[in-house]
Image (cartoon, rainbow, N blue to C red; front, side):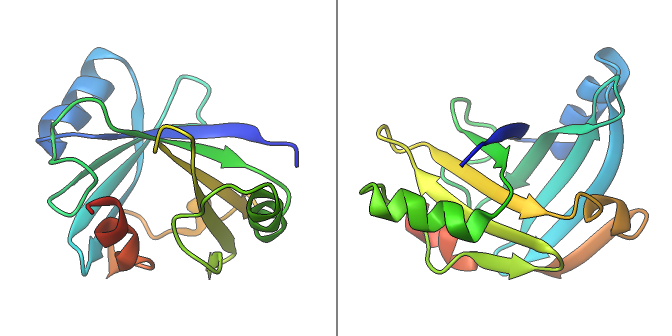
Length: 153
């Protein structure tokens, strides 16, 4: 598997204040806003100066840490085939946060647990998935609500 860095996700306490900080102060641009239900989690995707989505701000009460508590981040990596990556990880004895890998709208997702318990989200997609999201806020059922239950244990 050849992984490429995709983005980082950070938990924030106040989504609007954080969006203002990253956009006004640091020059990021808000690209997409997605509100999940069941559990209620909001993700705001920001692009850096190169225009590529690279930072995701997350807020909600069903997260591995409470919104705004520093120290939790989710590294996101792109691979050619996330399902194959999941098999490689399992074969090598590494824990996956859920099985089987999830496929939603052209994206396949698996989440590995690193030796310290950090989540590493491994995705494969056509690369056009984020661009196909509707403008503004999309509110959709969370595709893997059990991931929040699992990491809160």
